[in-house]
Amino acid sequence: MSSLLSLLPFRVSQGLTAAYFTVTSWSFRQRSTLVQTTEMASLTVKKIPALKDNFMYLVVCNETKNAAIVDPVEPDRVLQVAKESGVTLNKVLTTHHHWDHAGGNADLFKRYQNDPSLGQLSIYGGNDDRIDNLTHPVGQDDSLEIGKLKVRCISTPCHTSSHICYYIETPEDKVVFTGDTLFLAGCGRFFEGTPQQMYDALITKLSALPDDTKVYCGHEYALNNLKFANTVEPNNPDIAQLLKVAKEADLEGRRAMVPSTIGQEKKTNVFMRVHEPSVQKFVGKSTPLDTMQALRAAKDVF
Image 1 (tube, rainbow, N blue to C red):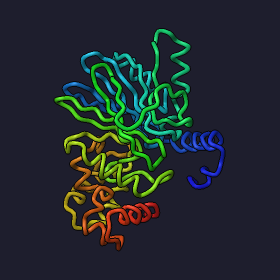
Image 2 (image 1 turned 45 degrees about the vertical axis):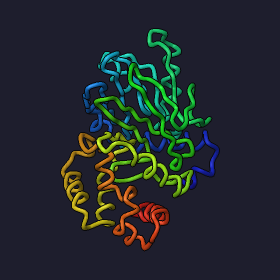
Image 3 (image 1 turned 135 degrees about the vertical axis):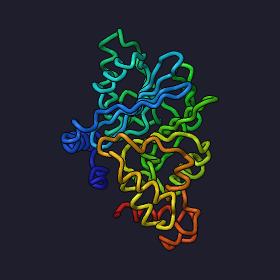
Image 4 (image 1 turned 120 degrees about the vertical axis):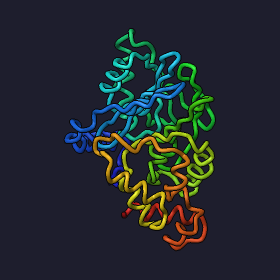
C-alpha cells in the first residue's frame, strides 16, 4: 500500500491515508481513550491514544503550565485534554509529515485563528512543505522552549526525509519523543531514506542520549516488535522478559509499555544492536550497516 501511495500526488495520498486510518480506527475508539499521565519533577507527559495505535503527547512545564502537543492528529481530543489539565497549549511538535501524525495540524491551527482566547499556536517540524501550517521549520540541534523547558531537535531522516525527534533534558528529567524513528523494540520503515540514515539516527544520535532517557514513540507496536526481536535473539533474556510483559499487558487499551528508556532499547531493540554478533548472524551479515538493511527487510515481511 505504501509503495502505491508514493506514486500519487501528495494531497491525494494524504486523503486516502486519512480515510484508511479513520475506517480502521473506528472499532478502537471505545477502547483507547484512557490518558496515561507521567508526572516528573519538572515536566508532565500525558499519553493520549489516537486512531488505531497512535500516540499523541501533551508535554507540560510544571512550573509555568505552558504546554506543547506532539503530533495532534485528533484536535478535538487534544483540546479536551488540555482544558481538563488546566494548561496553556501554544506549541505543536510535529515529528513528520505522515497524516496520522501531522494530519490534525491544519484543523488545530484554524481553531486557534478563529478563537483568540486560545492565544497563538506555533507549529514546529522539519523543513518540509508537506507539513501543514508549519510556522517554525527546525533542523539538527535547533531549540525551542515549552515554558521553562528547553527542547533540542534531533534530525533523524529515513522514515521520512524531514523526520525530527524532540529531546528535553532538565537536571531531574530526560525524555525524547521519537515519532516513527524509534519504537519500543523496533524502528520505522525506510520509506524515504537509507540504512545509513537509520543507522545514524539510532546508533549515532539516539543511542548517545543518557540511558535513563524516557522514550515516547509514535505507535503501540511493542508485542509484534518483541516477537520479531525474540526470533532474532532467542537467547537474549532481556527480550524474553519484556516479551512476557507485553503478552500480559493491555496493549489494545494502550495502558502499558510506553515509555521505554534508551537503556532498555539498547538491550532489547535489535535495530540498536546491529553491532552484536548474534544479530548479524541472524541475517547472515558481517557489518552493522549491512545488518541494519537486512534486518529491516526481514521485519518488513515478519
